[in-house]
Image (cartoon, rainbow, N blue to C red; front, top):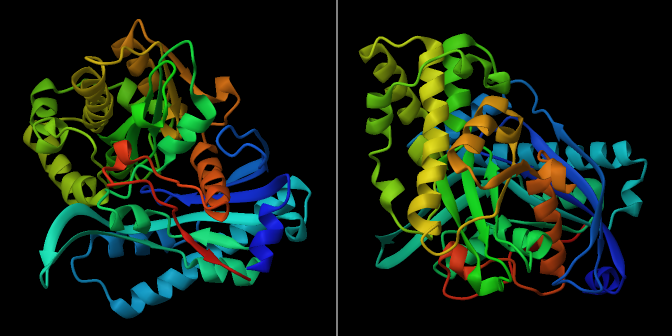
Length: 396
């Protein structure tokens, strides 16, 4: 493909990364300049980043579809293209914000919007397989922007027997590994995921997995009980009291005891979990603040117990770097600092990576690796039987 050869022949690229997580609160967009001369030791600069909010009604439509056992196929097909159009607009907006033009952009990497994630293998018609579905048609993005677009990153890993997630750990390894000290990269989005980079780690030494809920349960409870979009800064949780008995019940899920590699999502911590959590709050006669304090502690404790049970016996962290929406929850960060002491806890902003941009940047890097024919997964993190080139390349 001549257009791909022209792009990969350049010493550096301008790439847009696009990501919408399980919270469905908007499209994270980052425009970066990537030096291609050393793909396994990349250098990059962030030219612009932003979160582009979805139009009214999109979040509810996605959440309804993701929670439904029998969604309309017509609606799903159309929403796939609608989300593609919105991702294309986000690419245009972040380009305008940077002061560049779309003709200056070489490549777009889009994770899309997860609708269903089924990493556990199940048999159907004699075939045993996992499955995953992200919408936001990348062909639409390519046609609207005129830019080569890579999308649908998870499918190749699932085809190799992996969980299809987490995929950011390879980028964590490329950008944040250290010869001197062991570092953990904790992203607290809708789901929380942890990447562990032992000092002097090679790719096979990286451990990464989803620890459990991040902001998903907290945000859903806040919306359902207060009408607010989020517990900004964790102020409501800070004013409440943690219910230890309920927390023990919530922490009894088998997922927390399952050894990595593992991944999870809305299928486990979505509507049904939140409805039960509200019922639990009534059963224990808890205030809204108490319920949010307990939900926040669920995130913190599941992260820490994952570290203590699966990581610390082999690798004691020197530093924990927090990113994602949870990095803006001051109360949650303070709880993490207290729980992980004496590990040094910082936000990724303090290392020069804006916490809101990190995952979008990761998919810009992964898209670049796809064009170069390089693997984008870490089998030790996803459980795949080997490394794989991820994503599908869509030409404009």
